[in-house]
Length: 372
Image (cartoon, rainbow, N blue to C red; front, side):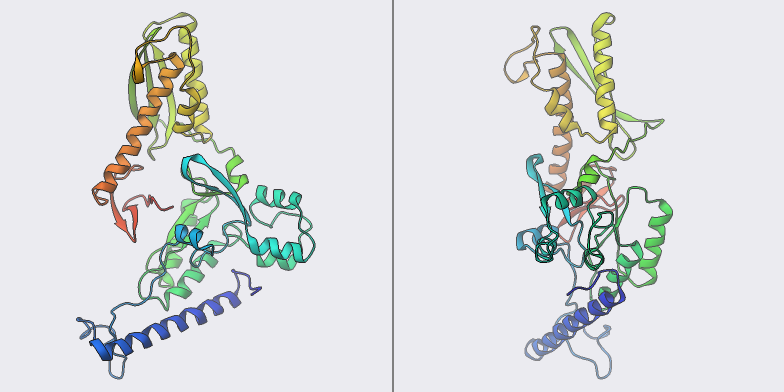
């Protein structure tokens, strides 16, 4: 429709659309009431007023999380703005799919400024904000989630909330540089405008995220080393003796350091294991995952092998990879155990209780969600 997301015109349109949906839903519920009667707790409810509609349904509307459903349907996700004009979607088995917005491609081709080089530039930036040679009216219309200020995100959610009985699923996107003060301001505005709930997400704040721009992927964000850390030590027998792999995590349950020691001290062996540990720790601090480290280290062999069958250790490096793999498997097993217990278990991020909300496993303390 050529209307920018962060504009009064968009807010007015959203209000008109959602009010129409609510009015029609209540009209249909009132017709159903004539056949089946009111919902059991109608008396004393907010609808029980003189001259008010008698409804069959206590609540009629919600805006649910539709990230996965929208992919299947090939449409936008709920009331969200575009995440990016061109982005990387992380799917199963570590696959990375580069996707571009089809409406933007269509307009770019119609107006004659489309090129593969342009799409590569946009993929690097994520938005049109810093891309040169872009028509201003196109730049204004195709604003992305990170181009839009948190205030406009909240205003749009609050507009829909006025005509929605239950809560509204909406994410307020923040850059990685966002502060606690920025988050607090968004929460307070959402409260002031009547939102029933609000979700914020700071870009790059989790070990892995479903949607990324190339800029996000290539960004060098070094995780600080905390004063205190906790972790797990695993021992493997190798042809060089016992090797001990210790993985330490920060308060957010993110792996940040690895220490490796051989039972036999001194010489090149000690220098080698210390060097390997430092390299692994540096990789973790710059965004590598334990699974990526495991995949790189496992399978490297030398002339001193130990054990038989699945327990066979091909080298000291293979032993470290296998130890890290066991930690990864334990983490996955914890998630599966939580799901089997219908969400009543420990959060894999902070250790607090997790529950199922709107079909998603969510932590009641830190906001971890399996759906995001």
